[in-house]
Length: 432
Image (cartoon, rainbow, N blue to C red; front, side, top):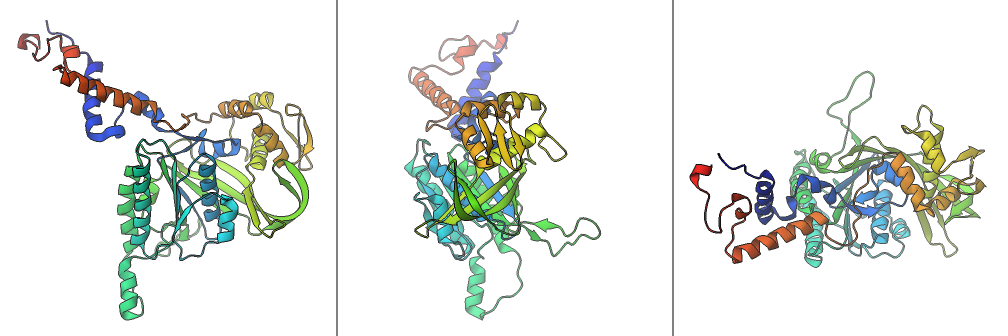
């Protein structure tokens, strides 16, 4: 009677062989969650938007929307989050002919060091990204440091051939979308090389009307993002940004948990995940962008995620036609109740009475256990937190490879474990 082959050992040896060829890009299916890692979100609103307890790393995150919707400012905010999470190597490729605002840029980064590159061609933009990625991988070969790269925006520059034509003929003619082809090829390669590395690419792009294909009747014109379809295909999360048309001045400022009298401006922004490979899509969050000049005429800008937490939690508990879909609203109230009257927030759980949404969110953040409990009730997915160490699955792969090397030095075969034969000998053909 033939012997039964232990499939688990066969699979383990398959993994050893695969990891020798593909490294950390091969792992057991049960370990796949270990590869979706990132630094933790402190805010309920960000967790809800991403449907994740962490900001995913080793991915492409795409921010897009119509012109003048503050897409760049959201990319600055994400860079700031990386900096606060310990990332000391960030690169910003400003791909729109230097139109960015240095004062706005600095008001978000608040002293964090970022390398800025202004390319003039599509090829230069790609060279900038690839050079920075390569230096991050060389500088941190143990994959123990966060890296953040920002491309703002994807289709901001033209190909070298068009620059050459302008220099040669002094004018432009119709041509095929060479830039889209170049970016499609680049993203096909670049995003694959991020796999297994704690390096994230954040990219902005414009949403435009497709003049070649107009819809008739209801629905309006078809919209598209220039630069080819690869950007959408390879992105892990697509965040669409919209905003109120006007900045609104206010006199009462809520900042760092305190309320003061200071003239400032607010801009309400609407964020929605149109695509997500790490959680649910169609997640929506409303957040205010707040900015003013301090006594030294230096601009200060921040996204009020604290206020967004309060607004989101209240909408979840109250319910209604446009409220987030939550199965057990009573469980949320039991964790942290919230009541709103005349725009002011009250909570018995937090001991607050008639405070601003910002003050409510600031107090809620002092209780991370509440945020965790609320996230669980909301069904927000939980992933491992990147703590400067390789994921457990990668460590397991390294141990397997080391074990195989030691066995080969001793003259053992990795198949001996399940073959039942002495080292160096095969099984009797009659047993097969």
